[in-house]
Length: 580
Image (cartoon, rainbow, N blue to C red; front, side):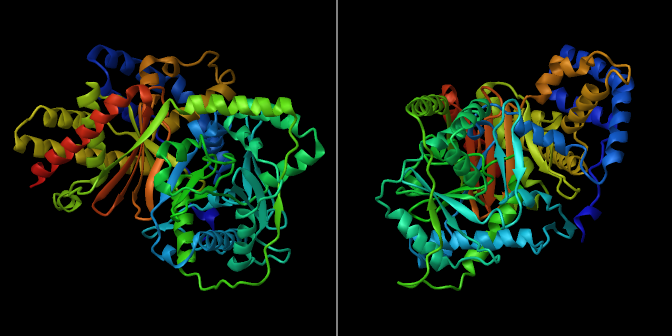
């Protein structure tokens, strides 16, 4: 199927969108606050909102089948000024693949790089198998940014730059012992070097004892984009440095070789990269640990988690199917040490940036919460939704520890639309709030069972609506864009009160930002930083009946996070009793 034949991203119905907004607000506000918010929202719906909605419909039709939301979605990440590892990137730590025991560390890494090269050529030549959910084809446009693109820092707004095919992008980068190299992966005729050739290049790098300069330049990607852009411009006044930066930008992906096993490095360091070598502006930065566990640090401008997991699963399949061999002698894939000439003042600034970054990153931590028995069979036997029950666990823990339910964001993939990315829901509903409060207070089992069923049904409806792109958050973003561009033309010279309403701010603040990859046995951990100050970031995956959750938080909340995990345990014990 031609990807352009996928349906265009719809513009939600305005009245329905406002209705879902108010339903999401209701369990978060008191009676008086909610009444005021409702008045503001309904006035918006029948006045300024109607004019802005009409303009959004007109704009959407004018660019179809392109997504009216995509420029805004990209701009969110391109205008972030803080270090990308703290605000935009996310981490996927893979489960140890069964075939890894066949190979040593560098052989395994070479097979990974070789398989990634095959994947890259499938994208270039448009031979990648279609991605689908059940029988519904999904948009694959994001894959174009996986290997031949990079985010480049600029003042105020970064750029996401695409390069040509393997004529421009043909090598991958390697950090090893704080030095940086490139290895040519694809030759001039578009053929991939064998894993054996790549392994020999990796051996030379791994055992290199030469005078190749240390790669302190990579600290720039931890500086925040305004500062990074300023220093890159200064460094690249030296022509050799400009050439080196161009080479870095045109790498397909970057691999970090380390002397550590995955167990020796804290999860926080894996995500925030306060100790590792990384160039955090690449879509794929891969650390390969000595025990052959891999982590993927993904720059988020172009690629979402669902799409990355599809590519990673295909990568793992290619690695598992590898039929090559390794020999003592033979050709070596071309490798190049990459150096930057850095003046002492620049080196001092980089050292200061690294120290400040480590200080900032040390204020955020991550814990890994694992529940080995989720009783998913019992949940499904009662015709309840598994994801709903997991969301109720987070709400129960939040209510018990923080004594209140705050805005909880859950991402929902909408890649069935052309250039579709994510919608979202506010997963706290009146039904779920009443259920977790009743469960916490020890209500009778029959009452709890009925309330659980109602809350689960409401959650399913919310997800279904979001899948159809009934999503107030995204819709409101589009309406704000229409105001900024066409407000005066539409007779709306001042920002509509809805957008500055305190209730609107409450709804849009992701105190608990949650996202799931569903049942994905190949991913052992899915993690990202908190989105709101003082908030939590919760990434979760299931492996059949096992839940693996990464909870990021500010260290000042450490005592509460310990209690939060105990409250999750308590919820699952109570849930199992309720289902028995």
